[in-house]
Length: 461
Image 1 (tube, rainbow, N blue to C red):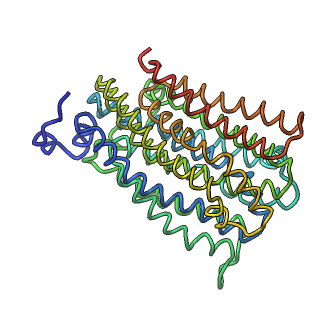
Image 2 (tube, rainbow, N blue to C red):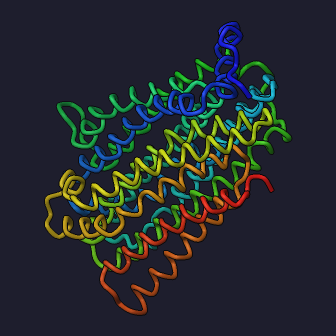
Image 3 (cartoon, rainbow, N blue to C red):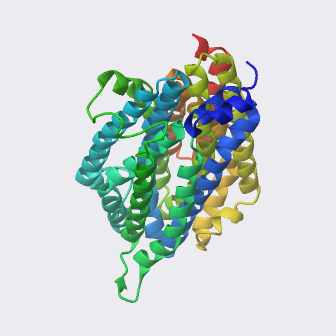
């Protein structure tokens, strides 16, 4: 289809104008216009991830190792709320708006918040009730375990805040507004930079809380963001309005979110199970190895926000075009976004593989921790292009409502890690280098398998 007449776009309201641009404006320029604010905002979130590692690293190797235990579960919650259910919410709202169903788009936003509340309660009950057993099963002992629990108990007590923040952001993005969530990410990052060290170490009348202080800061800044987005979604002129209809369950609309959201949420469950398994295997090599791996692998959690920045734009664009019956344009969007994300994450991986001190030196000066982390990046960094490609195509698949192959690719990654890690640690008693090679292979298979499935027509069956 040709470009939508600009005079017509300008005559529409802001919400409908955004929808029409996703349907008819030039593809690459629209993708970059939508993705740029996401990437900038998530760059701020990336800084926060690294910054937290630096701040907590000042408390010592036990704190770093403890946070490495919590990270797979905290990132699981983040990826489920922002990428799983959040991505499905963005897709469902965008498809409804693309098909001209504005009332349903507003009702979908309400259903998404009901789902968020239920899943937040599950996270809170699981981690507060069984956190100690979970972290012990991952290899946590002594001061490392206590550090993990101190951070985890605070963070998961506020699970509802994290879920509401990310689902509200997903609704806003589904309406085509990528700027507001990104501005809030930047603003909350600026709040977190002074607040986290204040709460961790204390100053003046404020008593230091140790590792728990970083979690408190995370909850405070997320709550601020959620309030702003809720107010924005209560505007009468908005394409999506939280109060347009009475608040009640609409099972068909809830199913519209869950049919994509549940499979999409399983993918980060599997991915983080892979990370948790890798963490447990690395833990068998000792605290220094676990701390080194925790610092090095933290870079992968920075690649996720970069992919998420483009991925949320991909979800919205693919879903809007699929809702309007433009499947060929949706597929072109997916490949363009996948190529961009693979190039960015691949470049980061190559640089850190060649000069790992650029990353590792930010967090620790312990020579043993530095050596183990550098070896990990030497081996795994070259596979980050495939990791980024897989993440981008995961978000695009959410927009298309096709989640089988993203799940299959994530499962293949987990199987390679479980089998390969078990062989390395329990059968052949290899060095950590062999385990790191298994991790690299799992990332290559993850991205390659999903790309191949889409190339062979999985979206059109």
